[in-house]
Structures are given as structure tokens and as C-alpha cells.
Length: 366
Image (cartoon, rainbow, N blue to C red; front, side, top):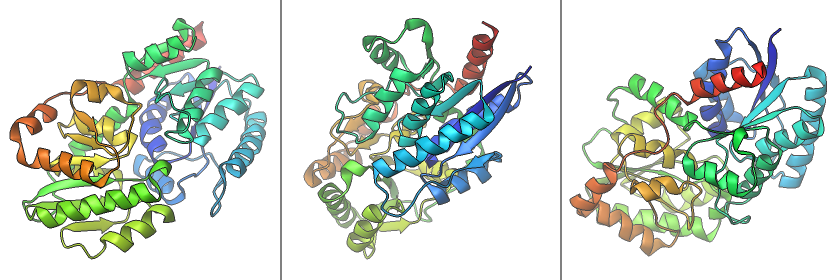
């Protein structure tokens, strides 16, 4: 008899990281796979599901304008509880550190349904940064049955918290599966017509709303005005807390190209073409090193220290002068640039989804 697995997706990054696993599970005759979308990122999720040709079996469409975390959590818990009671799954799987993932773990726990956590064990060790992600992933870890840790570092984080060793599996990160697949499809597409040095920028974290985002925009202004051989490509997150500030400060800058969020194929093409990445995104901290692109992380800490330890990424904070200094060093110092570009990637070889599917098969056999 097939085992029913519900895979849950809330945001665009979750879709990118869950899609390879969902597609791998589709191949197995041992599983009945249901995909539930909560739609924390409405338009972006729809884009991802179409891109991967994944069937959505349930869409909660849970988001509302200016919804608080408390309201979101309450709605998610009620909706997931009802769906799980209806479907009676043998396992629930979710990825990462969103509110969707944390509530999925909680709803599973209340109904005694095994919960598998993809990308388990990331930690900043500060509950308020990133907020609320650090709490979400710690909570999910307390409730999970299986933990799919990307690296030895994340495995050790879980062990220190008392997670049973036999429930932790080092698998790499599914985003590398996705990246390699679309990297081949992207070919040598050039998102910028000239031969300038392209800086790819993303910024969306709640902790960077307000003054931090203003600092970041001022740093981009300075870089664009001082370096005529640079083009800055900034796909702007649709959240008004990001979009309104960025467009007000940067829309008239000659060497800064603002655009709506681009689909993943376009993002991979931009990543392949770019000279360096400036971001607060977790996904790009994992993807860029796999393609040999230096990453400057606009945060004061990261739950992805492996890339920093490798020398592939660097924490630069959110102060204007610090961001400008670090970007200029990579633009002008070839030795430093080459050191970061050739540092390598600690996040796997593109076989993570296959590994997880095999582990699930063994779990149900036992």
C-alpha cells in the first residue's frame, strides 16, 4: 500500500527547494504525493508551480494585506489541522524556516503525524535575528521525526540541541539540485546587454526593513555613481516595505536596473553572468558559491557559516560604508576576488532529492 506524503510549500524559496524532492517522490511507486500550498508568496508561488509543472492539490491562499504573524499562524494551524484530518497522511514534509514550516510541524505533532524537516539545523543562535525564522526552525526541530541536514555544521547544531543522532541525515541542500538543473537550461543568456561588471542584488528580510534598507540603497547609489564599469541588477521584492523604499531611492539611478522579481531561470542566468552577489537571501548564499560567484551578505550574522568558513561568502553588515568598502575591494583587488570565487561550495553535488527519497523508503520499511 502506498504511503501518503503531504509536501507543504509557503514561499518562493520553499518551492525552489521542495520541487526537486516532490518530483523525485513522484517517480516512486511507493508514495502517493500531495502538494499543499499556503501561498505566503502568492504570485511567486504560482510562478514556481508552473515552472516545475507540479500539481497543487490544496491551495490555502492564506495571505491578507498587513497580516500579523499571530493572525497568519492561527489561520495556518486551523487550516492545516483540518486538511491533515481529511487526508490522514503517513508523513508531512516541509522545508526551511518560514511560519508555514513551523506551523506544519506543530499541526503534525498535535495529530501524531511524522514530520520531516528539509534543510534542518540552520542556526543564528539569536531568536530575534532573523526574525521570526530562528524561532521557526528551532521549533520545527523540536517536533520533527526526520531531520535532513545540509552539512556537518547543521548536523552538529541539532546534536547539541539533543536531537537523536539516528534521526539526522546529512544530505546536502536541494537548492543545488535545482540550480544545476536550470544552470544547464540557462546556457549563456546575458541579462545585461553591455559588458559591464554585473552586481546582482536581492534584499527582502524583515530585519532589514526601515533604516537598514535605506543604508543598503545608499550604498548601491554610491557604488553605481563611483564605478562606471558596473551595472547593478536589483529584482525588487513585492513587499511594500521593500518596494516603496527601493523605488523611491533608486529608480532614477543610471547604472541601477530595478525590476519585478524574475523567474528562476532568469535568476540563474543572472547569477551565471554576474561578477558578484550582494544579498540578505539564504538561497543565494548557497547557490552563488556553487557557480563560483563571491557573495557579500548584508546581515550581521548568518545561519550558513559554511560558505563563510570556505571563504566563498563574507558578512558585511548593513552599514553603508561597510557595504561600499567590501564591494569596492572585490571590484579592484583581483587576488581577493579570485580567492572568493574559487573557494568552492559546501552544500552538496545536486543529488540531495534522491538521497532524501531513499531515506524515506528505508524509514517506511522499518
